[in-house]
Image (cartoon, rainbow, N blue to C red; front, side, top):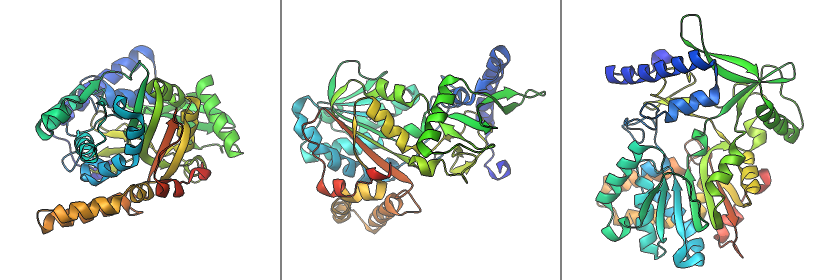
Length: 397
């Protein structure tokens, strides 16, 4: 598959080689590293990881396109869905976006909030990448009126003080460093990255520790059967701890996660014997995470049953779970499209709007592959649209 991938330029290859050297040194010094640690280094190593270096990630010039990069309709629908909660919580409500990407969502969302008259007290962006943070600053400073831009604040870590409002995360869970496990004669093994005899990266299996083994056994119990020998997949044993760290201080409000994935019984289908791990390089998807480390986005699909469990353990209740297409339609996509269509400058702009709707909603695009999960805590009532609640598929979890 690698032969069909675009060839990196000299600078890109040199960048990857620097990260590769760092990985080799760490493995040589400390022994094979768990795949989750390898994935973390590839994505977030300071100055070298995929998200922490200066390469363009999002949009046509990057490696993949997220929903906010397609245009403003996605953000307007998200705002439509959550603005009743912001209105209920009043002037003290904040909006927290996890991982701001290029800043496209924040730009469209703030303009939509201003138009709806439900601006949060602060628009917070929790962005670990210094490079992306700077890109977001430049974009929002240029695109927003000064009064709106003044509401935007960047965070280095989740809020430590209690707060009220809305937490939003689009394609965040899929980028959490995933643990890879494998089954051998009824025993749980964990995938590691080691060096072969010629100093090349190689994947090996080692007996899993108690945390990983316990997480896999929990899934087996929930599914009502054991994984077969040779079965290999991903799991996030750290997800409950991550959720508590990120959202534990949200005492009243709503959380909305949008990502690609499945309910547990679909995630761990017997025929999905090598999991869901994928690498993305210049709009090409491939399955070799050891290829050109630092230049690929590494992701794994989301087990939404595990996400629901993590939210429950952090004190939240699942308010709704549904495919992205149904979430957007229930959140006013038709009205948002019609308004934008009437305001479009020319026919090419109207065509782009129609294409945007197709990509967001068609089953073979983002409509069914992506799911939306809403959590609530500390609200006397959850003021979600009746259409959204009617489309809830939480019973599938």
